[in-house]
Length: 88
Image (cartoon, rainbow, N blue to C red; front, side, top):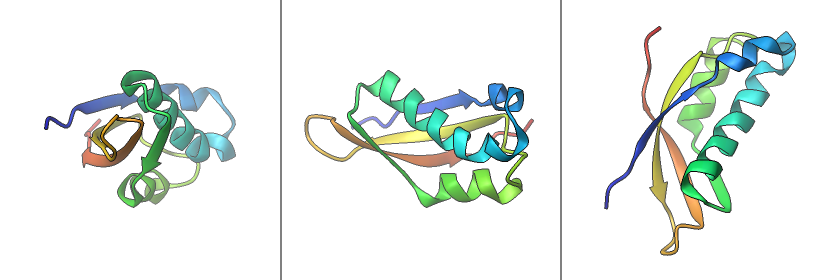
């Protein structure tokens, strides 16, 4: 089973207020994965959360590479895991 890797551009987060950037990054990742995999539920792994919030609340990364795994047979539930850290 092939697990696709998506590189998600989070540059638009810097258009918003500073204190909303990290929570909105999680929401943007979840919406991106739902749109591209047609999944109903997306589980975000702790590695993604630590990577985004680890830099600072107001300075999330501009890009993130995410590996998507299907949890159930129909592909309705997927799990997103940090694939690799994208250098800027």
